[in-house]
Image (cartoon, rainbow, N blue to C red; front, side, top):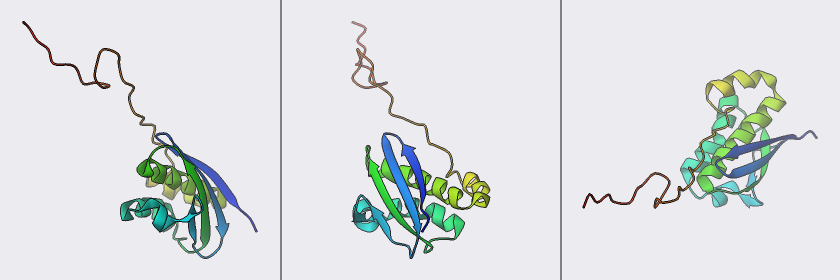
Length: 128
């Protein structure tokens, strides 16, 4: 039985995705996906690459993910799934790229600057 492995990243989250031919089981950190992600929107984000490829029930998914929050983790898993599906079938690359699933979202949290309360916020200015 062949496995298709890929890594996805988003913000500070890193997801190692393994797809194996199967019936559509979804396991994240040894917990069923619905229980782990908690929000329907995040489940939809994770399922998007499968829907584009029309392979929702052809693969079992096992994911180890760490770092960040649930939203960043879902984005990392989506990238990992897209990469693994392209590894399975190179013809899916164009469809995945067209939907934006092959692009690593490079947006990160801006660092806090010294002399300010947050990254961009400033203390109130007083002329007198």
